[in-house]
Length: 278
Image (tube, rainbow, N blue to C red; front, side, top):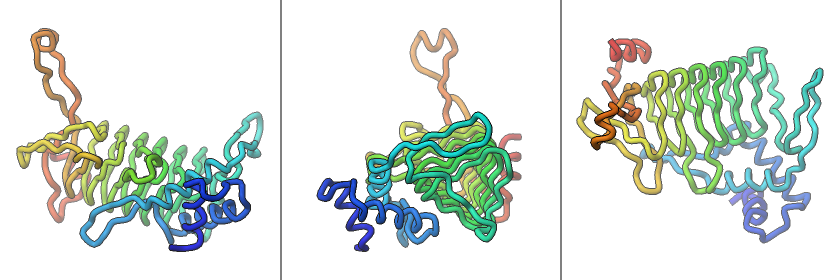
């Protein structure tokens, strides 16, 4: 257990006052470690099982607790008011991240690896991690503590939800080489395994059943865990009919994600999605 971890856990539990210079210093070090990738809000073990780093999320919550709302400088009539210890991150040219002008913000405590491209406007929150070579497209959101792998494409208006509380809850995980289509929403600790494809408009939550027509099964979130989309799955929006006379009379149906195929080893993500939709 590091000194940073010890101090922040004590502050979170109330064993030491949050309004303490040592706590503030520990929180600053945590932000630096998150930004460098030395620590992460969630990690996977050798078997590919993901777990939240509880102390990291507790430390971020301590930061919110001790933060004071201040005014941040802006041009023209715009004004911004936020916690003094969680300002936008000041990326540098040597970070190797391409940030296209137009209103993007990366909050302090977010890791953005080299060769990431961020189109405007996009927002990446504290504790999030973006892997090398990924694309964060216009109007995309990466929520607090969400983990985005390498070579991921978050298309325009994709929303990757944040999971900060409770600290033990797994955040949203998007593994390597995943394509997330436009206007997708991935929330509540959902895990999307590597090389999966989410077609435009797919919404995944802990209460969303996913119908796998390839393997003829229904995927649901396990108790106490989020939904899991298998590696290489191609998921598109679908519908399922509601039961009952009233629903039948009015032709009612619910939106339902459907796995229509799985990617082959040499099949590009976009090709797989296009052929699946033909």
